[in-house]
Length: 252
Length: 189
Image 1 (spheres, rainbow over the protein chains, first blue to last red):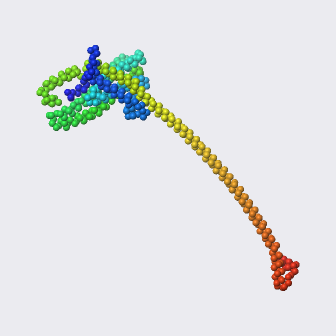
Image 2 (tube, each protein chain N blue to C red):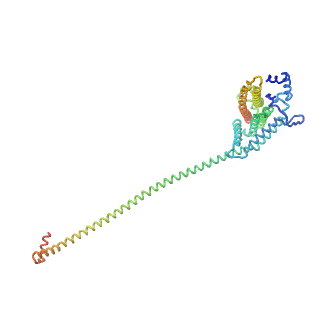
Image 3 (spheres, each protein chain N blue to C red):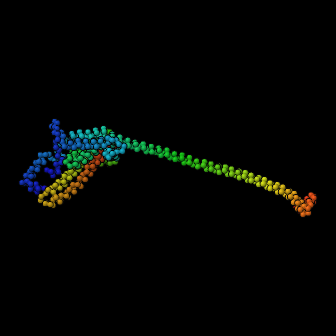
């Protein structure tokens, strides 16, 4: 089973908990969620404990992540969007650190579970809907009726807008989930080739020699996966900011 | 891979037969789509993300924004202070240059005054010295003429005496005074 690329996504119970027939066990997935939060919080809190006017390296990294998310949010949702800053920042750090922790061999990738990414996406869309109605009331529905569309086309365009709005949580969650899942499967498959070729008896000396090729591929893919880990966290954040912008300014 | 497995086990069929149920036993389906794990994942995601949100809102973000604001204020304050100091130094330079120009003008004035004064003084001294020299020259000339006239007046007496002595020596007899005076006067003319 060592070569099974799906094995890494198995969820194993560590502390079985069952409440009213629901399985709420503390699993390896839960463990890595806790690890993600612990790493994020410790990094941000300990690095800034010095409150240095001249930052240390770690403090500089914490400040960079703060300013990175702040500028992303401000550029897509304006200064009003800064009220969502703690939420967006938490999302970005959670996804980023979860993705990066997943890059360690034998570690579980929290974001490779569709239910996790879907829950995060629904949290975003839920925030957009609740805040949009709370702030604009029924005017929030103007989001679905673009200005300057000929009267005949309004129902059609509105329908398209509604569908696109409803597909947002799906696209948002599937994009992150699929990227992490596919990346880890690819890595595992190529790494598996290295072992299979090297251990192959029928290929003789040819096996170990050619096993260098998938090894090189694995190294290259690891670099790519680090890029993907950051990029997907960034994409998730940017889209969140854009959706929040809709809640702040629903008129097109 | 299949050949390796086939070589290891007695038949490929048993390998496949053991592999498939094993996967099915462990998950029932592809793990990310196994809805039996969803309640647990949702619960723990809610707990952990809630804790993260709380930690960010209460501790990390206020602290980082505080640090950034402190730095911004500090830099702005330093810039303002630097600006103020620059204006001060500019003013000081202007005052210094003005003072320098004034001092130069004054020095120029003093120099020309002094020059004029010294010139007047030297002129006066020279005139004094010239006057004194002229007076002494006149005195000397007067004395020379006095001495000259005195000498000339005595020339007659000396001539008379000498003549009388010469005549006495020549003829053995002194001539009369009137004759002598007459003869000397005639000779002096």
